[in-house]
Length: 280
Image (cartoon, rainbow, N blue to C red; front, side, top):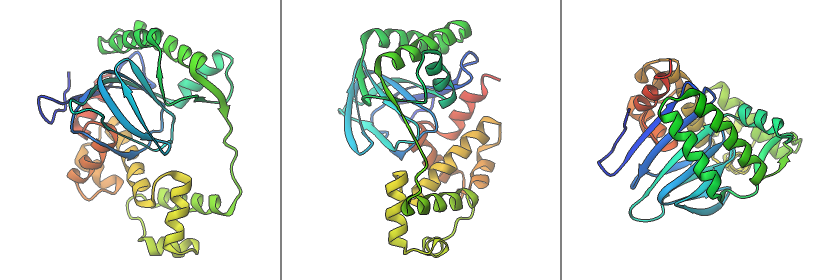
């Protein structure tokens, strides 16, 4: 088992199972670790097994304790830290949007699934989730893949709400934020300064930051670091050395990458790479 530990009190393992190619997995105990404001491209389904996690999600603070789930939708800014002095232990699945949407469609649910509440208690689902997660931990491909689909189906049927419709806004602020986003995606390694970026879209720096944060939940520099981490994950999964990844995605060096990566993913780049490459 690949362990990334700060002390004997904390541990984290991030990995992929051969039976779940569209799902990342995490098991961890955190006491001092804090997740910065960040987003995921996937869904996040986390079962707390001990302690309490406290997190900011969609502008509100939530607490989730033993036997409860935290469910985070893709692209929603959130944090995470200990809600009690002893921290929290949890198991997490990060299923891709494509997988969740496919399972939803198989259950007669159309559109992009959303959930009524970001925290929930469902004892039966917790038992089944733990079984699926442990099967993946044991490398049982058939059991883990079968159990996972059953867990996601039950989660959707019991706890989803009518799918959100994400029609593209044509308002001036939304168009401005999207223009800035596209510029950041195109200049990942060498982005312009804030004043230069503002001049490129013909607004003041203050207006740019305010508008971008309103649409994407993060100021441009924090959004860029999240984008870099996402690209880093793809490169690490492909086998690129962490030091090379740092330069390719625009971080100054490997320690810079490690700091941002761990605050968003929960483990460092080396531990992440060991876990996701182990299935190959």
